Image 1 (cartoon, rainbow, N blue to C red):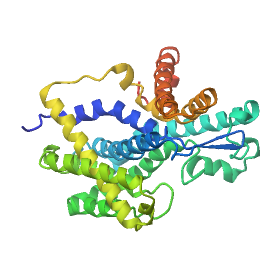
Image 2: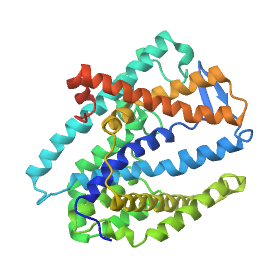
Image 3: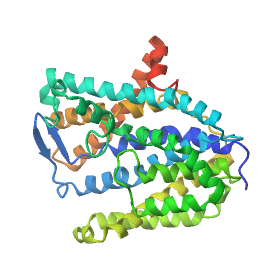
Image 4: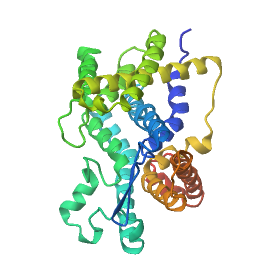
Length: 369
């Protein structure tokens, strides 16, 4: 059965909130917690069920979220585009300044302010590993907005937006490469991504360029998501086999000695097959019935994404301090409860802000109300 017109947009709409939950779950995993300058280390061998569950959810399944968001971004950027002129490019850049750049600046500033407040008033809840905000130099301020630690901005989850802004600035290159080479430039980027080949410059991750281009080709060229239905069963089989393989290797110490190239290709093939599987499952559901996302949850997507990192860390620390986990059940409870609390509080705060400060809320979420 072929997709009906506009079903790609329906898929994007209904997947956004579940994918945001996955983004939160990526950061919900904990093995070491820093409080007041001390590290609290969890021996994962003592909690094998938690270790495998968190690996499956946070390191495998949830890692499909970021690539899919890049696919959506590439598809929507070129959606219904007749000609990619200079005028159209400038219009899109101005639009993305409002939807991406302004929220990016605000939320990094918000994290800097929260760091300052924690360091000043509740130092016992701070990690003690970060430089005091009051001691920041000009270089520190620049790094905070681009590459604070591990190649990420200080509001670390916003590396996705930073890289997306870079890709959008270079979108004419992607557009004309697809126009001239069809799918071959996308395949070339896919090979680089599969082998985890990057140039090592913050803001230029291969994952952003590949999946943005993959989404873009469905708008630039006359392709539809019907093409993925042809490999539906293969994607299901690969997903199950590779998830099982990854879980087995997670429990084998010698697996760490495998060549990085092999590890990367197997892992990324697993991620890609799960992306295709999720699309096929969602499209199969959409063909049977129309789904309307809960507006309360759907509208809060961006706010939850932008706000969740520090509250999630705080909820995790508070729960660990209160429960002092010594069993699998307690550890898994914290792993599940902290992100669920973070999401619930985020939805609540967003909807309160939307009612009392609609213009401000629109500004910090890029107009996503």
